[in-house]
Length: 445
Image (cartoon, rainbow, N blue to C red; front, side):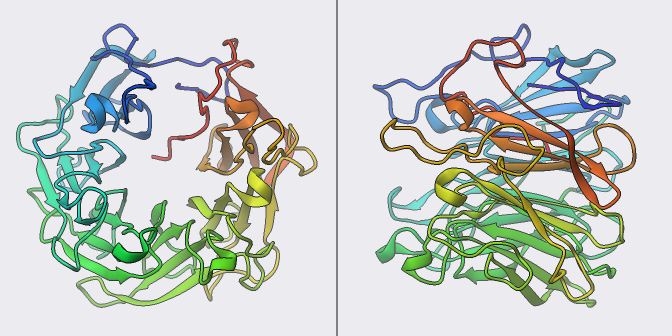
């Protein structure tokens, strides 16, 4: 679903795009009770950029469940009327792919001024048993050009195998200038697997510097991430200096069983010398000084993260979702950046119990067999109304078992709940659809 921006923020004049739309390749296929893994998952990942530089933003849509989990990506080119489905193109993976399109990122990785598209396939090229893998995953980069994205000569980055192999390589992708050469580098997250006690595998971060022929000379920036099992990945700087930082979350991680799934967010600091090297890190939890709340079993702190200077003080701030806080009610925490990493005061959180935010926070209800709202499953920072301030969008994909989105406009000190809006499919005139998971994915680039 594409919602346009306006002077009042997000406008509720939506445009539905699916594989049932005229011109979009393929056929919409949902879950089937007799087929394991059925469902295309069209829209599980999104990325937007002007791939052909015609002045209109284009949309890349991941569908990692396509063809029983092989995956695919649909690229819909933009026009003065919005997405032009008659100019849609489907990108299929090469052989050996799995969950192709589970993660997407746009960036000019080959220095030609055209945005390129990185596509994660975290289940590709599985080494070992599927239930006890030693390594899996690949990332494909399609170059942009005057005619759009090209599939003729893609760059494919593959995981490393063996005992120290990458598990689910390509589960999350980010773009940023890590070596400060003015170009865009590709960062690849392999979250590993810490759920299988006897077959636990660490995670890693891989850095691919931009090159004329596309990202290459990739190297592991970090390996052996014992806190693996994560979700979101962004690049930025919270401390206000010129050195970039890599920020990723592990919403399922905790130090002990009593706090299992409490969640963490890691801020990795890079040094001045090249090649890029991690020289330190900060770890944020709800037990960290100045961060509201406390670590509790299953909070999922770091379910989603977004980065931006929300109060315009020169330091990038972190917006962190904890979708399972309070039995699945969900919460979004704003942690302000500062010279030493983050402020130890003045941070705050939002939930559906916050004054001014529409709705009511609802957790699990065993009697009614209902899950919680999962407010904070996705967060996004964009200036929707063009006033120069970042606005906050929050996804709650289980609200009323169908999903909803809440928007808060930016203000001088961050966000304001005045004029906050929440809407679901019914607000937009569509019949209630259980398990639609509206708000499970938000466009961030």
